[in-house]
Amino acid sequence: MSQMAAGGRQEEKTRNYIAGNVLSVFQVMFRRYPRSRWQVPVYMACNIAAPFMETLIPALAIKAITAGDARYFLASLIAALCAYWGMQAVSGMVDLSLNHERTYTGLDCFFTSLVRKVHKTDYVNVEPQAMQKKI
Image (tube, rainbow, N blue to C red; front, side, top):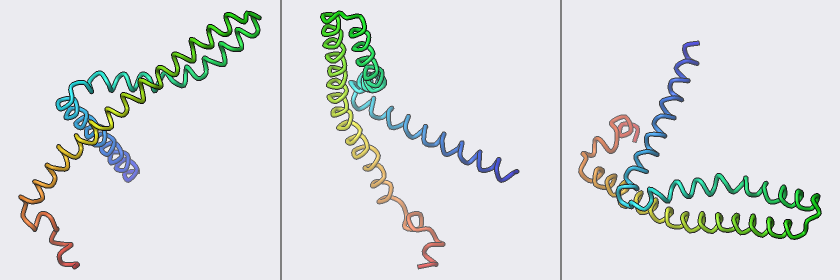
């Protein structure tokens, strides 16, 4: 029973550790690239709304067909498709920009600081004693 509790705590620590890492990456990215503060919510909103739009289009088509109104059918279908394609275009453009910002944030901030730390630390800290004995 205590092992299960310890395992649960370990899993919780891992989840909190991952969430903390994600938040710290976003904080650094928001500082370096202020426009990403609005890009992230726009990207998330477009990607959350897309599946709803995908189900809305057939529903509108069925409603218009059963009503027998061809003009309403065409107008609603064109409007829904344009909205869907517009969301997909915005999502794609924001995704390209965010990929650039995430990549350079990771490379420039985190990887550079890791390399600096490795170069400044003693060899004993880089290669633990137990591993040195095994080698």
